[in-house]
Amino acid sequence: MKNLKSITAILLVTFLAFTSCQDELDSENGQNPNTNAANSQTASNLKRSSMYDGSFDDFLDGTSCSSILLPVVANVNGIEVTLLTQSDYQLVLNILGQITNDNDIITLQFPLTVKTSNYTEVVVTNQAEYDALIDACETLENEGKNAISCIDIDFPITILTYSLTLEQTGSVVIESEQELYTYMNNFGNNELFAIKYPIAATLNNDTVISITSDLDLQASISDCLDIEDAEDTAEAEAKNLETIIVDGSFKVQSFITAGVNKTTDYANYTIDFANDLTCKAVNATISTVEGTYEVTSETDVFLDVTFSGNAAFSLLNHTWEVTSFNNTSISLKSTTNAAITLVLTQI
Image (cartoon, rainbow, N blue to C red; front, top):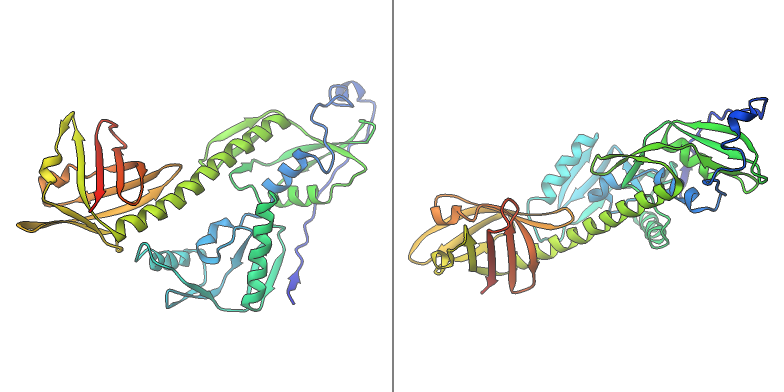
């Protein structure tokens, strides 16, 4: 059984009396186009965007619906690591990054405590209980009820409250995500609410936007979720590309730079990518050219290549955008000059 530690979320709610300042409220009273019920899309948007975001330690726990409260002990690819503070996350990342295209195994030492999306802390005593948390998170994701982490509302914000007859009954100032989550989670079916616009929000690329209506809020969330989906897709494609390049050997099928076809300069070389982020170009009659590489992703996939000690291969030193790839061919273009292109073919 899980031991739940309740977190008391205190809301400082100040209701304003419906007084003689009637003229001041006329623009809101009963005429607010953003008035919402507890089961409205806006209520869902506010609740999901204010859930506790546990995605920052996904590399460790494999679930975005919760995070592990430190300290914790983990076995990472056979190496025991004690994490006392978040700065110790780098110890785990260093081990995970030693080899690409491998099956990383992280075993957690129980009992441990996690903080869940509703801000409660749960003591997990064994792997079966932990697996149940992960399964519950996957269910929320499949139902579209998980946390929205690609947009952060900037606080404070003001929520206006209304009776079911659309008379304004008061307002409440919300100071934090946890306050907003608790407020929306407890909002009753016998009243309505409206956000006092405009509000500001910060996207996950640190862009600050102004939101002026419920429709604007919905559009902003839809846009950032689309970008998040594209990032997830690119991340999966990057892992697939890593597998392909590590498992195979390649030759330069085409290299065009400054309008000149330089392919023949590499005709006798075989390029091998190792799973320790090193690469080498091998020619049986000439010395080997050493290099490094890295596969990264944003909304697109990128292959960064750096060779040294050879003028011809130094021309390949670019951050390349992966325009297409499959098991036998990888097409690339330079991120600084789209006219510079490279095609690698698996031997």
